[in-house]
Amino acid sequence: MPMRAIRSNLFNLLFYAWSIVMVLAFSPALLLPYQVTVWGQRQWARGVNFLMRFSVGIHVEYRGLEFRPHGGAIVAAKHQSAWDTLIWHAILDDPAMVMKLELLSIPIYGWMCRKTRMIAVDRKAGTKALRAMLEDGRAAVALGRPIVIFPQGTRTASGASAKDVPYQPGVSALYRGLDVPVVPVALNSGLFWPRRQFMRRPGTIVLEFLKPIPPGLPRKEFDALLQERIESATSALEKEAQAKI
Image 1 (cartoon, helix red, strand yellow):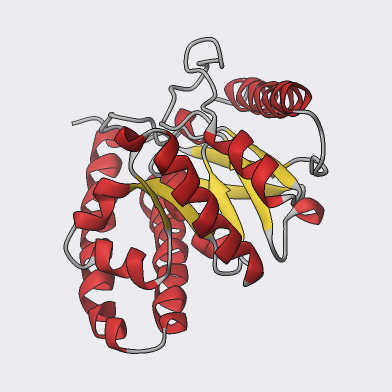
Image 2: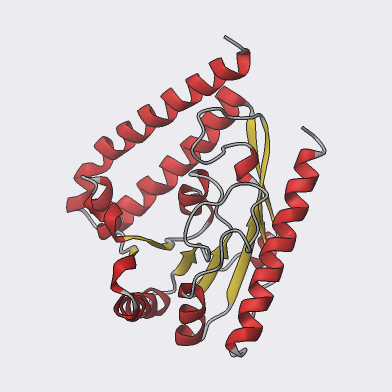
């Protein structure tokens, strides 16, 4: 078996084992103040970063940290990998993740998401779902929590553009309804932890916070600016990484 497959096997085994251990270890935290569960989520994410580096040689680099929000704001990020769904617990203070409602049905994990007041969206509910998301978003911002949303609503393959997977209206609804800055985020995680693939590739995942978009722009201007910043920066990160592979 090629070494890359062996290392990928090792990481996948360690990742699921670590996740199970953390879920079981912190299940009693459901009876404690929610900050205990938030702390556990942070340790889980940091542990995954360590396991990636240890087993498959995937390192992590953060750029644009001067733009990282430290209070109520919207973080609109590219989404290429399972890694993108967990890393926010390690780099943001008590993030409120916009997530699929179905995830709350997962035993223990879903209960923890409820405990930490994630923003669950029923994609089948249409405008009703947008109204509920706005209500939860306002509550999060009032508490000084950053909201993390994936504008395209799903994982995209590395190299896929907004033409392949269009941006959804959720981020625009939050922008108009909450009157807070939006911090775009570009990344290249799909090159190293690809969606729907078993194999992992050594290298460096780069996550880059981009210049915030101030509140108050017209919708079309905001949509175009957000898409241009995320897509152009993501393309640049992918090209940079591919040149090193």
